[in-house]
Length: 256
Image (cartoon, rainbow, N blue to C red; front, side, top):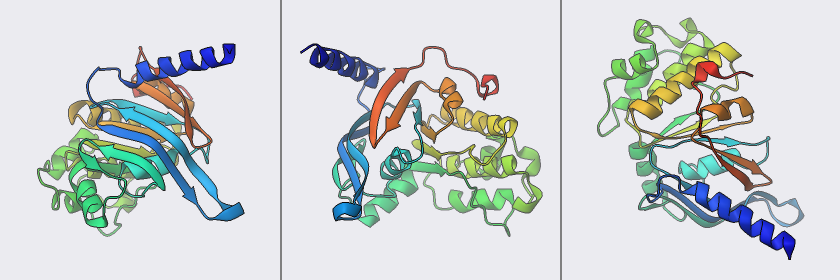
């Protein structure tokens, strides 16, 4: 009986933190499950997961490899489909949507930043960003997006002439040039050293603040949690804790 009461109290606390602004969430997941394989070989990447993310939030998803972070991000970004449950962006139902609807959703609403930059080596920084601007509905100028990430002086450099951190900042500029509603980042500092990683996180934080993109960063690096509005810890395909961050750090203040 006591254990049940404590569990109910913990869930109530998590529910309170799940709606920090008192407004409807922009991302909603209910009973989200994702499985791969069949029979004894089945892998349960997500297990009955519930989640709300609010407009303009900066959320960090923490957890070890295999905890379900990337699977969740891919579903929220319309790159993957759940096995069961609901996933939605505002009035866009993502679970069960056809490929044409998901393509339009990704094009019009979502910017992605991955661990590896995936820049086209034969194009300059400006040209890599222009590729996305050309298909967006209301893009920034590529020069504006690159200025936001501190690369105004590197517009006409090719990826091979840029450091790893500069290439990742070009990738951030490419993601934000379309003025996305959501910026989804999968281990964006995973291939970088500490100081370079902080520069990339500063670029992401500035996009969240100045573009207004609801931002989700997944990482196994607990130090990055210091810059988030909320920290969601994952384990075994579930969200195991939700913590509000009342004293956000600037990226340059992080220590790891």
